[in-house]
Length: 408
Picture 1 (tube, rainbow, N blue to C red):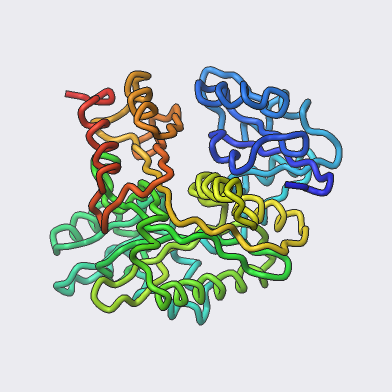
Picture 2 (picture 1 turned 45 degrees about the vertical axis):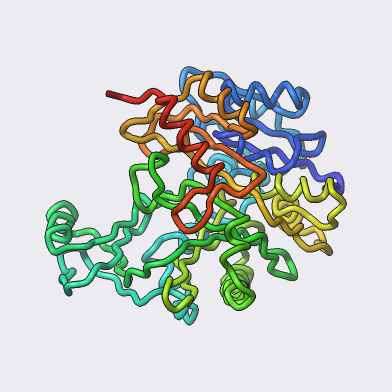
């Protein structure tokens, strides 16, 4: 992709986040030195720079490292996976140019409490909701969702099923504010979209694999995406409803000065098929990289268009976008997170999965529920909601049978 001679330096803790397009003379990557990132550096030796250390460095620490300062050239643009106040401050003190939108706007949109006010009239897309201190919540004999202001991959979301569960929560966090929502029983979907200077561009909708064991211990954690299953499930009316919500959220972001990627999560009521907005990610969603790689595969077959990641870069640089995002009809990925029983990966198991035809991205994380391995397939891995197909079962059984550092 032509960046019109703009130079972008993507600084990221996990190199996989930056691989939505191949590193090149105009697009270089700075990341931690890991077994996986060294593999990537061998492919792009001149455009990938790895920093060694006893522990993995976060984005702010990578930005403050002397090696990064030596690599940043005049007029280059710094890009990160998610902008925060710490990241923004570090870049500002060095007088570098950050491409990401302001962290303050990201916080306002993602915070489950401030988001309600930010949405304004668009709260009509949310399930019925209110905000209260935990100690003030009353049990009304029906399950409901509690969300703290901040969460990650479902960690801040809880389904309260009984009065006893509510009491336990209140005893632990009596003074914490929470958003309470009606529980919608149904399927989850997600879409990556881009705010450009003059338009809102929607990527490909995927079915969101959530809470599936053994991939996570948390019933609300996202563990993967299946673009093929979304194609099977969603009808034209469903897609129209999703497009309407994405457009309206995108326009609101655009008015507030947002540029580039954002993600929107939905739940579809299994009885009424009504589509509800449940999450806005004001940042580059983690699924962007693989979605873009699937789009590149379609381009290699002759399909015209732009990838989601390319659209993200062009929007950030305020370059014109005159193509649609390439449509994909198949493909899936699933993430094994760090769980009570699975806390590491052996080379033998990685090789087993690769020999079965999957691409495997390995992370060096130890925090509970963080990414451990990302397993990617050009074909769907889910048969229907919460039910893997033969490929999904193949992945699951490989993980179970290989006992990836299984604690006993």
